[in-house]
Image (cartoon, rainbow over all chains, first blue to last red; front, top):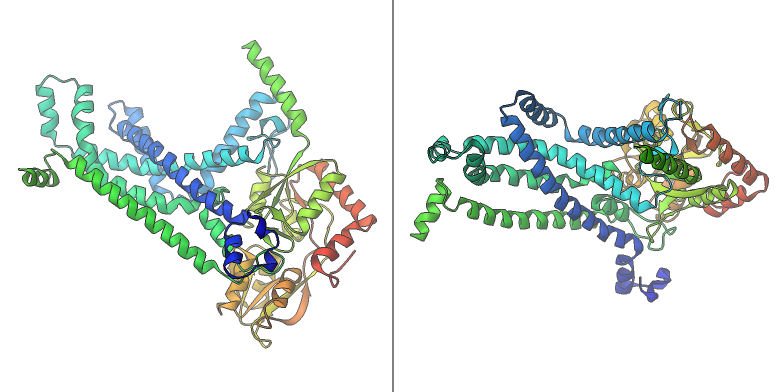
Length: 293
Length: 240
């Protein structure tokens, strides 16, 4: 990065460390922190959407939709995450490629499965093998977001389903007495009140999601844990910056990163909780009212 | 609808023409000097240089991809990349699932490394990387096998006393022993395993395998392969 880093073998002490910490490999490590944050930023709202949809489906009066909602939550919740992460992206990827193979190469009469091999025509590859590396990385990231969202959406669906059932029946009866339609009561009464019941469960999920991000490497995305292991491993003089086994320091840095993330989240979640309790007929809401009075 | 079909067909055709020439090379990136990620964050090592030269001779455009060793074969057969160039020894077991080119490194020795020269490699605890021929050998040797996902972790296991010895390709161990200031040393005899290192391809990809086979043969014939082996593995390395 700096001109003075051109020949690391001549450096010593602090200047060596400075050059070491700004090597191209370290810059990739720092960018991977961004990858993790981006994953969290996209996955959380998408999973919440999946969860809301799943909960609504599970409560639906239309039987097949209810079956779908129940099947979604119980199936995904019942399968170990790691198996799900190994299965879903590969299955999705092959499904996409199979559809493209049928659509784009109708003249090809070769089977897609040839022994152990999954072979589609060059035009059906997703992404095309000619695409630049960033397209491949974005595609892998997209699959990862989808897999994370499906899994965490199922858990969120169950939390939201429970929260919707926890809103006192009297609230809905009052809404009906005011002449609100079923939909109006759902939107104006049920949804605003259920969040306070859903929050503890959802905040748990958020914390678990933060800690689950190292699963990214299973999906072929180089996340911070991959880089920490790769950078920390002992290096012989074949490398520009030889050093002994430094994994301990790198994992300590990860520890600090994850603790920072979770403690920040806890602070934010506490605020949201206070805000949602405001004016609610719950113990927390009642306490707030007493303090204010 | 018709326009759409024509557009799709045109797209398929052009993409097919352009796509035929890019080969994605899969490697592990954690096995110096065969392949590793250098300090710039790029794939480097003997196999990087060899692969680039082979692609040049076969007139192919190549692009490097890294993948965990554990899932390197499944990701090849499901089409995420087109070749494995990762110090993979040719064995019968692997040849049932993928096909290999001729070897580009002759059948080379594997060796034990330990802290003490009298370490028990036949009955003690021996570390090896998961799913390697060395791990298979340790499992059959009577020693207790301790598997790790990356080769670096197998060395760390010996250094911190979790394992009595590590069993790996000698070419990988030589620089590590040389730079350990006498801490590590070779134990016992070298052992010949496997049929040399070759490039792995999908069994349905016979055409691409032919191209790389020819390119490897041409490098063997004009001596450039031997020069490359000497450059990366030192003067004592086995040559063709």
